[in-house]
Amino acid sequence: MARGTGKRNGNGVELDFREKLWQAADKMRNNMDAAEYKHVVLGLIFLKYISDSFEEKHSQLQTEKAQGADPEDPDEYRALNIFWVPKEARWSYLQANAKQPTIGTLIDEAMLAIERDNPSLKGVLTKDYGRATLDKQRLGELVDLIGTIGLGDVENRSKDVLGRVYEYFLAQFASAEGKKGGQFYTPRCVVQLLVEMLAPYNGRIYDPCCGSGGMFVQSEKFVEAHGGKIGDVSIYGQESNPTTWKLAKMNLAIRGIDNNLGPEPADTFRRDLHPDLKADFIIANPPFNMSDWGQEGLKDDVRWKFGIPPKGNANFAWVQHFIHHLTPSGIAGFVLANGSMSSSQTGEEEIRKALIDADLVDCMVALPEQLFFSTSIPACLWFIVRNKAINGRNRKGEILFIDARKMGSMTDRIHRELSIIDIQKISFTYHSWKNNSSSPTFHYEDVPGFCMSVKNDVITKNNSMLTPGLYVSSQINENDKENHREKLAMLIEELCRQEAEVKILDETIREILMELSNDK
Image (cartoon, rainbow, N blue to C red; front, side, top):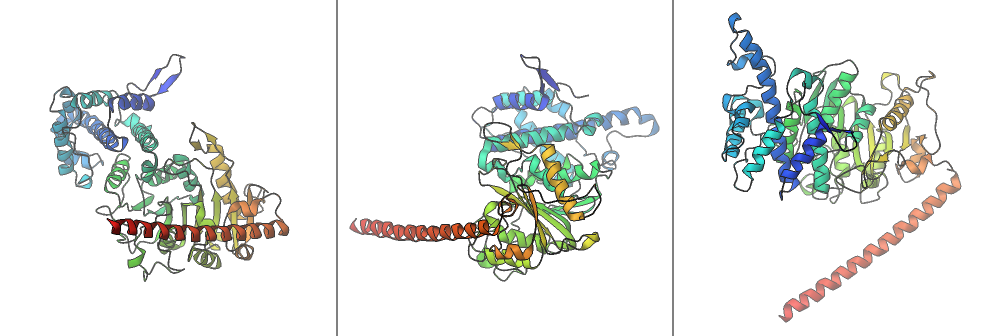
């Protein structure tokens, strides 16, 4: 049983042990940035977990010596998917030396030893604890603190104690880092919604911008919750940020999830590490509106079957990358900025129209604001399928629109979260629509203000816009649509005028600066 799993505050309410650990560790942070401190803490948590798992098996083998068991034989552990932990890396040894000024060097040596004896972790672990700028007294206190929580024994593995700590810390670091944090963490409720709608029971799952691996973790949880087991799905991913790639590898390793994230970090567009992969499920939260994505060198890429994505925005490069990697019966669910649903930027409206004409767009969900740590930009979910007629479905030529903007509740002053009930309502609506059955269990009906099934030709007439609010409004009629188009045209005209004025102003400022430079 986990020690130190909670304490009571002044009102007698038990504090979650994750919160206790965060509050105590955060006080030790001193002046270190969350982005830097993240790797210090998560590396130690990972080390404690694998050491606990090892020590439990080690104790068992000690009692079985008479039967020929060898507690110091690495193969005894590897056969059970337990990492071999050499003596200098075991938590008991590190904690015994936590008060020594050499604790940072000892932890670095422990990490190196674990990587040496466990090839799957090579290049993954943090090995910078001995640096002069890291307060060794505080580091020792952090070692003692983490030592109060059992992480890797059987009981706590079954409760996923380590996974809960790890996920909580990722969320807290994302919040502390603000926009930068969102690069490695997608809010849990968004991941849960994507997974519930995709329903990845078995097959190949792919995330080409996998961050810290949360999409994969939640997919495995879905499989287990529905009677499956870890291993029913195969995990493929890619991540360009080296430190985030390491987080993903650790996040999956602590949960025993086999994965192929490529041999190293790499840019998905410029160097696809899984060029021949065809996935049954694609789940992703790519960077919003990424401008520097390398379009100049990729104009003839085989992935752009529906049009070349514009130079200044990678949204539809991601969409077409997903489609390229889907099996004929595959489904993709992913997060994009709201602008992807209605943008008229060069090439984007044409690509969106081509996707609709090819009957690939299955469902669009407008999300509430303030869900993400990384951005205040409103976001939406896209669902793409290669074949709408598969498995008895009968939704060819239609798209389901769900407007969830008013759902969820505020968890603090700046962050909103979807509840389990919200997630169930949205996912059930989607699955009922997909099944299109007369069964009372899966009976779908349009609900004005929430969901609407719309024919593709109607969408095409609306400039191929995929904004749910345009279709699910409770007062939609032809006059409203015409008024909307007129207002949109006026807004576009005004935007073009303002952009022209900005361009003229930029040129004027540039000329003035040049004149001043020449005068000197």
